[in-house]
Amino acid sequence: MAHSAATCSMTEREEKRLFEESSHVLIHTHKPTSQSKRRSIINGGLENLHVVLDFDHTLTAYLCPSGSGERCHECHDVLQHGPYQPKERRETFRAGIEKVWSDQLAGRLGDLSEWWIRFHNEIVAHRITRDEIRDAVVASNAVLRPGAAQLLDWLRRHDVKTTIVSAGVSTVIEEVLGREGIDLHRNVRIVANVPIFDAEGVVLGFEEPLIFSRNKSEVLRGMGFDSEEDDNRRRHNIVLAGNSVGDASCLDGMDHKHSLSFGFLHEEVREEWAIGEICASKLSIQITGDGESSEDLAEHPLTDDGKIKLKEFSNCYDVISCGYQSDFQFLMNLFQEMEEQHKMNKVGLPC
Image 1: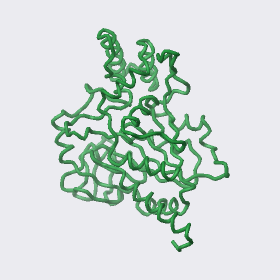
Image 2: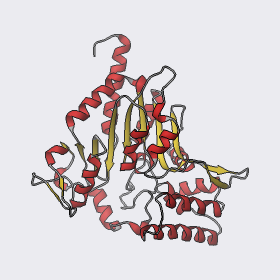
Image 3: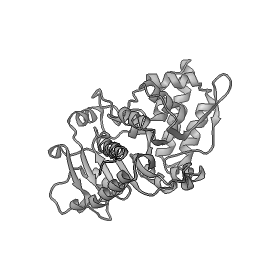
Image 4: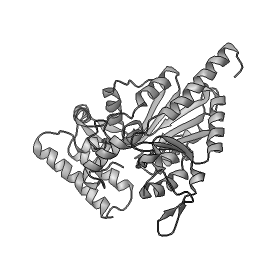
């Protein structure tokens, strides 16, 4: 879910310091398992690869690269802060969105989906247009995560089946990628909330189904991903990247043979860890009934809040990249190894 600036727990100065000083650490939930999955996916070949990517704070960065300490806008943040005219219309739109936020924080929303429904209703009520969405993207601070452009380019060049699954808005995703010089090719499919425009480009509503943070697997099943095979009746091997429990659940809604899940956990890494790699089992993380965590090792790469979130992530992801400056290098190393094996297979060399 997008986060209003008013809900951030850290000051801008604190986040700026974290961005400038943060390191990142790669944590394998169970390294023998993640290595085995990695090898199975490599052996499966490029022709059987399906890459599934979340958008907000996965393909896009978490903190702005300027070092300002600001969090990058997610899709709904982009829309909330658009430079709509006239001023009165802009103010009433933002006031409506802030009311959605305040009701959510006060526990007055009946269901998680209500946040998305009410936000989308405000867009329709204020007659936001396609051109205004484009202007909102231009005015936003949303940028791609380091390595995301190279990742998408590699997937395009090798014609790898790619699905972007997001609880954001498809038009915003397309505009952000376009602003970054990325053209979507036939290998990419976006599964997100799709605006319905009239002949003048005004948003009239959104296509069904509604996608929110915790129903992605359900939506994918409803779209037939749980029984999908290509023209050659092949089941694909999935590599998934996300930054939430809901993102990881996409695997439950998609048919696949092997999978490897990679999670971005945006938590501070202790300075002394710098850039490292460890297996989570060596941390012996135990979460007690009162929410406190303890471990056998005296040192832990994350702060106290991060330990609890890591425990949750370790139940969902095979490999977790912790820190504010994490990139796609782990996945690029995997894909480049697959590319090398593909080349050797073509010339008949032993792997």
